[in-house]
Length: 267
Image 1 (cartoon, one colour):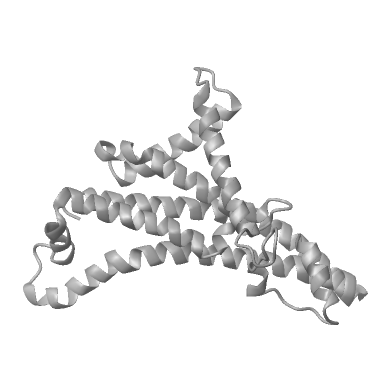
Image 2 (cartoon, rainbow, N blue to C red):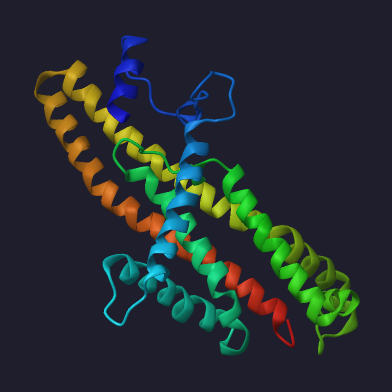
């Protein structure tokens, strides 16, 4: 896909055209104006993959796990022990493990699709998908906090923490409200989107730039620089895979921390 895009790009002009935001826009699969684009297809496939992963892991659970059960239990155990119980606590954490494990798995698959051959696009580079996931997290932790503490007490404790001189509240209260209610979902969204966007853009630049240098620039310099660019893209692919999994972990961890904060006696 990346090489095909590069060939089409070079066919439009004599020089190299660097990748940009146009490479994140896709026509409809069945018609140019359709909503059913490649990123939407990736999200649909990822949904079925996550469902199949945990269904196969739990369908015939045994003491000696099958490969599917091992993978499912490993992911679930990682989220339970290293995210849910650490961030929320042993008392409340267990009931959120299914949600957090599903969230982590879903984001990881959407991210890792950026380096899967023939797919090669992280769906989370489109802001709409991280925004929906962040909105779900936002509704969840606000609902839990209000349910446990009551509407007035939840926002009172958030905006007016105890032990602070009252004149400070004039500045602190709006900052706390803005930070909790507005900034949190925005940072969740933008952190994931920008990391996936930037990583995919850099990979495009290395691959398409290397192809241009090898095929069209020519000469010793072109061949040498193109070879370095292509080899660099291979290294970057492995690094990007690490970043993609790391961002799935960060998004899930922050969601768990927000839930834990909402349920804490003093949040």
